Every structure is written in structure tokens, then in C-alpha cells.
Image (cartoon, rainbow, N blue to C red):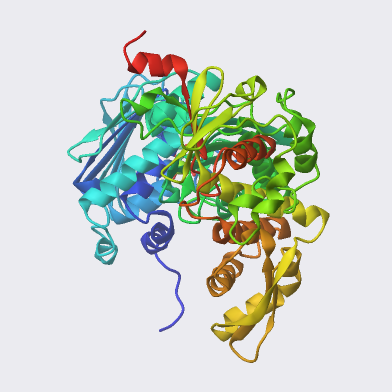
Length: 614
Ligand code: ADP
Ligand code: MG
């Protein structure tokens, strides 16, 4: 075939292949156009999952009659000056309307404020009808019927009306979060409908809109983010670690008001939560990055979902740093949801606890544990040590110093040293079901999940130890040989140096095998084979985008999981109190590595309410 210039319609259909993937893409482009036109009200109507009909109307600036034909012509836009680096509108490519017109039956009807009547233009599968007068309110109405009728191959890729309608609704929600001053409605014969009244401008309005879209329980379980670095500002909210989802769909992110689904941002969020969430859980977020438009390229993707930052490392650092700091400051708040009526009375622990180190308000407590906590984890001194299997009881003398109370684990009787009642986690009174420590403070009842708490403490101790000196190791009498797929063996062996810092000593043992010679003492008896396999997975998973620190943290988390005693170990009063004190002294110990709370607090007042005394 000789070379020839493609027809206008063909060119548009090719562009449509990229820009208009499914009905939701049409909704996105049309809603963005309405917002670029300064609308205060955007109404979306769909039918047949958007394949039969999408109608978007707005009360924006409108299109002058003389420009209607240009609006649906390729590469025609009113939004771009002469600088491609200074983009302040959502659209700028001049591609959406001609692309949509080439694959559907499109009508654009509009009237500007200064015109006394409206006009409309139609395109069907790329074929244009002349502009003609039409009655219209101020603003623009765009109607798209029979999407993809002109490119039936595309129709085969649609996921069914229900799924397409859901995707369209998701698009409206995503955009709506960035424009709280605009009223959005979604209606029609499709099942997903929305009505988001305008809530105004500013931080409160933004939060109100977030609640409208994401549900009231998100703000109730979220922490505010507000940080800046080198002219880049990050604001918004992230969920507390105990409020998570099974996928990342509830992670909303915006760059200069533009909704994006950006890999860098997603990976930074994952990195920030890596410490407190298991791999298969995802935080809920609404994050807003604001920066000089010249420092971010939004023109890297036809649908403008990706962006490219001039300094990606800095942006990543800002996101990870800001979220981690906010989580640390929020200390140990845990989710309020999942609460049955009675659980409503159970309070997550107070927020003040944990991040300021041993001196954070526990001034009444004696010096011994303060010193050991401040010096980092020392398994020979650590109060949590007795939880581990394989150690002699005699060494528990370590925490017999100081006015420790003698709460009897079984009877719960005995005197309580008054200063323990003022400690954050109070005085231990009993252990029940061999895993839950019941403690009391002056005005509350505390229940600690011993297993979760211990896991967290080992994790924090491993991390601390990394920065000071190697973690003490215990030699295995007979090295354990672990068989692995060759790539995994290679991966683990290549990290031998790092693992040694954690007290895990491994070496190659011929093809497809690893010999384990030492394991970290603080893990106690551990299943070395399982630990090595998990570590191999972990190392394979951490992509190159992660910093060494993040990788080390993950290795520590994997190890902590293995070391933690399962429930079922009876504790003596001293051991329980020592655990409570260790928790108080350890930042972030309010949640376990999987983001579950390690303890809950029930205020006396709430208990009295439960019993109808108040
Ligand atoms: P882009 O948004 O990239 O400029 P589009 O093809 O989406 O390209 O739209 C082309 C032009 O049509 C826009 O630049 C704008 O001038 C005009 N336009 C489209 N939709 C609207 C609307 N809802 N209100 C006012 N003008 C509109
Ligand atoms: Mg547009």
C-alpha cells in the first residue's frame, strides 16, 4: 500500500484509542472541561453504564457560537498560551471533544453569558453537522450517545454496565474532592448516583467534601498532614494504621488540584506505612501536593493520570517523611470503627504517648527502665526478654530494682504502688486467656494484647539496634540448611552482610541452599527455614525505589513477626509491669507491625455508663 495521509476521522479515532478508553474517560474529560469553564454546578447523567448515554451540563462560561466548530476540531484549545510548562487548567491538549466525536454521537450545546441565545453542533462518528441555533441556559451541555458505535472492537473490552457505571462514579468522586466549592450530581438509569452539595472553600470545606465522598468514618480515623519542602507543599489526610482497605482504590492524590494515579505517590504512601501495615493492607488517603507548575510535567500521559516531577526523590522524601511524622505524632490512636455498640465505650489510647521517649510524662517512674530504654534495646536488660522462650528465670532480677508492684497474676489482689497508677499503661493486675494483660490506671482499665505488643517491641528494638551495634546472636548447635529456589538463595546470600547486623548469620551452601549459623537472640527459638523464605520474599518484593532504610525496616518487621511469642505464655506480675513500662518507653508501640492496636483503654466513666451508673 502506498503511503498516504490518514483522514481527520481516522486520526481522531486513533487518538480516542488512548484518551477515551471507556465511558469513565468521557465523564472525566467532560467534567474537567466544565470545571475549566469555571462552573459552580456540574450535572452528570448516564445510562447503560455510560455506553448508551453520558450527558454533562454546567453553568460555566460557555462557548461562543463562533468557536463551536473549533471546540470539536483537533488540537484546538482555549487553555494553552505559548508556554507548555505553565499549565493551570485540567485540559490543554485540545483532544477530548474531537476524539469523543469520532467514536460516538456527540452534541455540544452552549450559551455564553453575553449571548442572548445558544447554539449547538453535532458530530456522529467523525461526521460533522453545521452549527445551528438552539435554546440553552448559560453554560454548556455535552451529550454523548452510543459511545464506540463507530469502533465496535472497543465495545468488546467493556466490563459490563454495572462496572462501567461504577468507574464513572469513581471519576466524579475523585475530581469532586479537589473542587469542594462545586456541586456535583450523578444521576440517570445507572445504579450509582451521587449528590455532593457545594461546601465552600478552604480547609474545612475540603474536609467536608472528603467526608461526603469517602464517608464520615474516614475523617474520624484520619490524621492531618501539613508539610513543605523546597517550595512543594503536601496537605491532606491519611488514615490511622488500624483503618485500612484491602486495595489502594481509596487512595486519592492530587497534584495542583489535578487528580492523579501516580506510581511515585502510591509507592511513597506504601513506604510511609510499611512499618505499621502488613503488605496486603492499604491506607486510605486524600493527599494534595501543590508546587510550581514548572516543576511538574503533566503532559506525560494522554489521559493525564500520571505526572513527572522534576525532583522525584525530593517529592518522595517529603511524602514519606510527612506521613511518618504525622503517624508518630498521633502516637497510638487506633480506629473507632468496627465498634459494636458496647465497643463504642472502649477508647483508643491517648495520643500523647510514645514519641517523646522515656521522659514523656512518666516522670514518676523510676530510673532503671528509663536508662535501658534510652540506650536502645539490650536483651540482657530488657524487660520484654522474659517473654522469650529459652532463657533462665534467674535473669529476671534485672527488673526487680525499683518499686515494682506485686500484682498477683491469678488473684489480682495485692497492693498497688501509687506511682504505677499514674503511668500511661498503669499497674498490671492480671493476665487472662494467657495473652491479655489487664491493668489499671487512676481512671481507666487497660487491656494489652501481649503478643502484638511484644512483636512491636522486638521490631522497634531491632531497628534501634541497627543504628548502634549489631544485634546479639545465638549460635545454632547444628547449622540449619534451608533449601530454596536458586534465585532466592542468591538473593538472601547477597544480603548476608545486612542480615548479620540483625544477628542472622547465613551463607551459601551449594546451589539452591542456604546455611543458617546464627539467629538473633531476641527472637528466641525460631523456625529458621520459614524466616529465610519470608526474608527471600521480602527482599524480592522491595523494588529499587525503596531506600536502604525502608528495606532494613521491612527485614526487621519480617524478623519481629517470627520472634514474637504466640499467646499462651503465663506472665508474672513483674514481667507484666515490665512489658507495660517498655511499651511506654517505645515510640510507636501503640500499634503492632500490622497496624492493629496493641492495647485498648476503657475509661472508668465509660464503664460506669455501661452499668447505667451515669
Ligand atoms: P481541552 O480541554 O484540552 O482544551 P477539549 O477538546 O476538551 O480540549 O475542549 C476543547 C475546547 O472546547 C476547550 O479548550 C474549551 O474552550 C471548549 N470547551 C469544551 N467544553 C467546554 C465547557 N464545558 N465549557 C466551556 N468551554 C468548553
Ligand atoms: Mg478538555
